Amino acid sequence: MRHLRMWAAAVAIVVVGGGFWWYATQRPLAVPVAAISRDVPVTVFGLGAIEARVLSRVGFEVPGTLVTVEADHGDRVPAGGVLARLNPASQEARVAKAEAAVLSAAAAAARAEAQRDRAEAVLAQRLATARRRRDLAERGVGSQEAAELAETEAIAARADVALNRADAAVARAAQAEALANRSAERTALAKHTLAAPFDAMVIARTREPGAALNPGEAVFTLVDPDSLWALAYVDEGRAGDLAVGQPAVVTLRSRPGFPLSAEVARIGLEADRVTEERRVYVRCRNCPTNPVIGEQAEVVIETGRLPQARLVPEAAVHGFDGVSGTVWTIEDGRLAQRRVRFAARLIDARLAITDALPAEVPVAIMVGSGFRPGRAARAADAP
Image 1 (tube, one colour):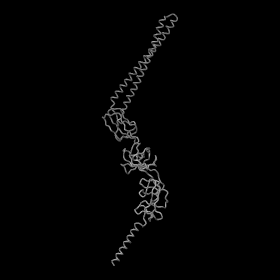
Image 2 (cartoon, one colour; image 1 turned 90 degrees about the horizontal axis):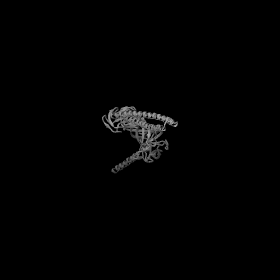
Image 3 (cartoon, one colour; image 1 turned 90 degrees about the vertical axis):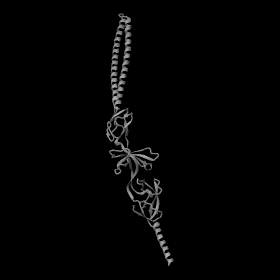
Image 4 (cartoon, one colour; image 1 turned 120 degrees about the horizontal axis):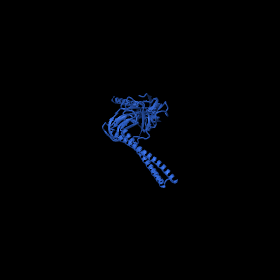
């Protein structure tokens, strides 16, 4: 009786173990398969920051002491609008001195012109006298000596005219120099006022009234608010289909729930040799009112659309090399493997199959531990 019970227990163990073995290895598996998706957007992702195409750090071209500041952080200033001023007292004195020099040069030029005119009149009178006395001497009425003296005086008058003409030219040159110097001093005075070079927004002011400034020292940082864009870094392996004009979505880190529509404005022609990324600039269509230059931004660019495709997670593909890989299929009720090519890799790491695989052949989107070629299987809806 005891042996009978032992045999019965052994048989039960074998039966139960066989049942578990069959359940674990032979039962048909319910395999989630990819459905056919239509109008599938193909996108690439880039992480970057908000930048401005037109950004200038402006300051005075001349040294001086800052006396007034007309703009501050966040202000919008039209082109030509005053930003700040330097103390103009010393430069105004230079301008006044230059004005006086212009007046003096004008007077000297007028005096030289008058002296030239007088010399030319004297020359004309002495030429006429020399001609008369020579005529009298030739007729025997006047002396030869008087004629020669008159001719000598005419030659001296001609030399005086040449000298006065040269003096007048020197005076005119001095007058032109004085005018140029006055223009330079006026220009230097105008440089004591700092104006906006374009319609700008002030994003930084670095100096306060009373500060002594060196030439070229930045006082304001300006941006053109119409030139804002996002600079995104895109993996080289995903950048092949990028093109200017493609639609994009920009999400700022400060406003994660408010994506901004944009489009690709520029694609960098030089990739980063270390990170193997390309620089892609996208211009927003409805930019924020108060931009924060340098704020982190996530950029999603749509490079195309697939009319229809079966989407398989990359985790369910063996040996994916960027173009092709091996997927699990259900053929004649059993698991099989096929090498397929993928039309695109989506931003969520799903791979799109568009051709080279019959539509009636299901493709697994999840791979389990019991998968092996020839295992009985049936298609199930994706979870």
